[in-house]
Image 1 (tube, rainbow, N blue to C red):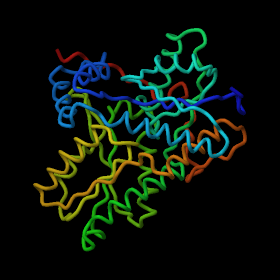
Image 2: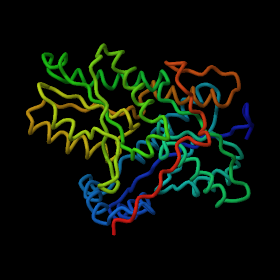
Image 3: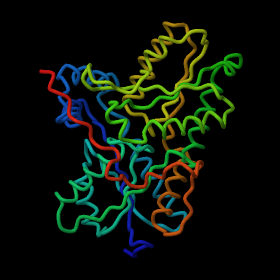
Length: 342
């Protein structure tokens, strides 16, 4: 295969992964929380969320579709590169994908993470796990260069704006002007959030979407916390926030922290938050995740081009925001392990 500028030959879409059958649910969850002292009862509770949707997470299908769409987009600009999917927590694991890439003759590739934001689980942990996978594969494992975070890339923001606008338009006309915009993202332990730009980047992305829609009144809330009860996490929690709303008539939840419909989005928002809003008498809608929105796929292609070609423009809506291209020595560190509750 001919080498491109920078010697890159492919893209690795590095993702979280998810189970694809009921039998895979508990082994998947055990891998996700390995070493985190999460009580078995909590895993069993989360497993019921997956089984509610047939024991299959839609995230792998979403990521396979995204990989295909990115391949087509890259080919349209003359980059005839394969896009491989590798997962941190389920098949195809990073090691499996790197072996495949090695056997296909890939020596150097760009690693594109399926999270726009910098944090330990969204940044450094991917770097650590990919390096560990390369060591496991050994000689011939492809060299990987990380594509920067893209929380304020114009294409990601444009896709988020359009998904939000589409959801707003499903409200009755009388409710649209008063619908509360509530952005959601995965919660993190406070000790983890404090070592990363996660919250600042989320707030910037939310403000860009809200400003474009002329909606200065918005909120950022968090969901899907999974740690020990005594460990402080980012707040407010989405359910507590909704329960404390007063005077609101309609709520639009916008999962800006997620690229596709993880089970966390489907359960926490479409099931639990929807039921709470119904009980509270709130009109409820949920915006779609960006998924394979053409503006987002185009943004990923532009990020790949930027990484592959020295001197390519860096597309950002807020040039003053940190690029977070790589983690510095003190950035996005793993927090101390909480004590075993048992």
